[in-house]
Image (tube, rainbow, N blue to C red; front, side, top):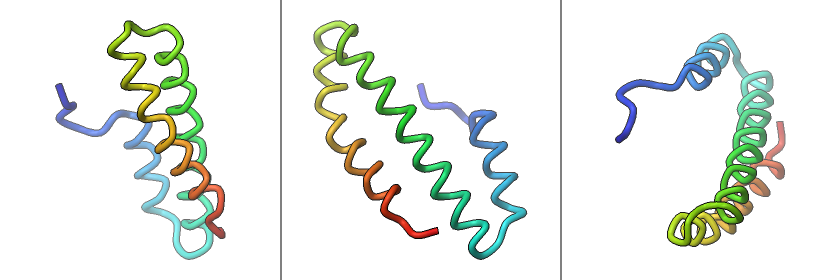
Length: 78
């Protein structure tokens, strides 16, 4: 099921971003996107290795997209 509200980490990041403007905002968004994608990739890699057959296949299928998004986030100027 989909959560009805933001996760605590996302809520904290949202609150942090509300107080930032300009380059500080851009730097924080970039930093957060990179870290978030790195964490997601690690989780999907673990599922690809240790999940049941269907979950592992889904994780492997999504990894190229997650890696592409990480490269995009890393390439952003902040």
